[in-house]
Length: 149
Image 1 (cartoon, helix red, strand yellow):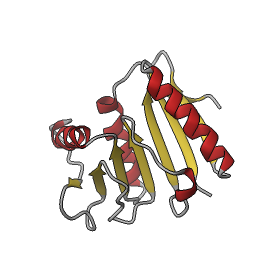
Image 2 (spheres, one colour; image 1 turned 30 degrees about the vertical axis):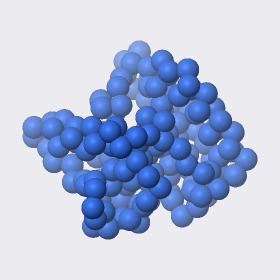
Image 3 (cartoon, one colour; image 1 turned 90 degrees about the vertical axis):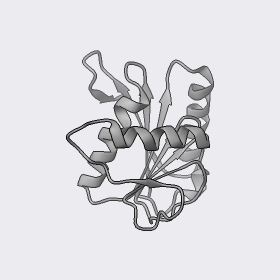
């Protein structure tokens, strides 16, 4: 059964949160796909992951061939690298029934965007209806992620 995590951004930006989550993914030995809501957003994420920290390298790719990439950035349904985890960001969607075969799916949404919150609620309902385990995470005042439900 796929575990689905909902990360509600209120204090941090996607650019501040995503690299750390991807680093933890790679530490587990997992491959990831980051699905963005638009091609432009996927390109900005790709550029950000090259420059987010001087002392570190996060192997990833976007564009032509993703089969060998530990992290694949896209705006489509493609999963060429056989991922264990799918990140949905910036309005990207997934069919809850199509999550089988993944260890985890993480939806990161902006709590200041009413449409993003509504989309997260709809996805929550669909993953629960599909029999997936869903958990909701919110940042504390100190910036730590706390499980809320």
